[in-house]
Image 1 (cartoon, each protein chain N blue to C red):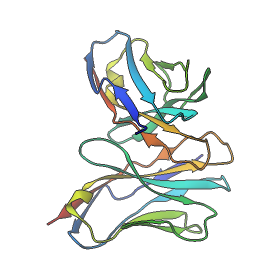
Image 2: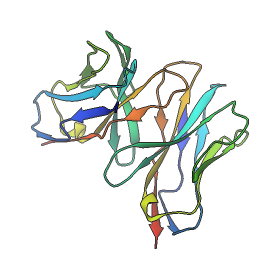
Image 3: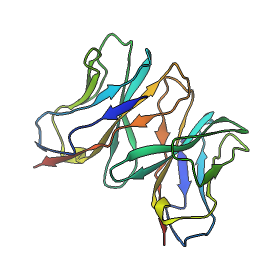
Length: 116
Length: 113
């Protein structure tokens, strides 16, 4: 079975500082992808970043980077230079490729609040 | 611009009524998904489709059905709405089943009284 665990229900960060949101996963699938989504208070789900299990380098997208540690089964999201607009809920998700179903498994989310 | 839309955005209904939530995407994606979001559970998959006439059950499919008569639409039907189905519903689509990102619609907030 596949499982995503986000152990931080809520986080605070000072504006302009970096913050790390934790995500650990469990899967028996040898090939998989990891995703992070942002959900602001308006409710939409916004795709942030993707990491494939066989990617040699950690993914980066602007101020977002994914700290992928395969042996530890962790895929933490790092947001650099936090902005007030980063206040939102963040979801880690995973998809196993061997079953080829396309289904995403989500964690329960972490609420991030950026303080001015 | 290509997009994925959901309607209605908000819906209040009564227990026992049939309700249909619409999802429409203009990306020409083969794969479409329905999730529900509840506090303490994150997002859970209800049904999904890999193409026209294809539908599959997700982890929380009881009480829901979908049909795929064209590429663009995947309506979600609650056959007989129950209070336990009060939730926020998200539709998503992707090009392929494997590496491609799923893009989400804006969500529908459904309240069953």
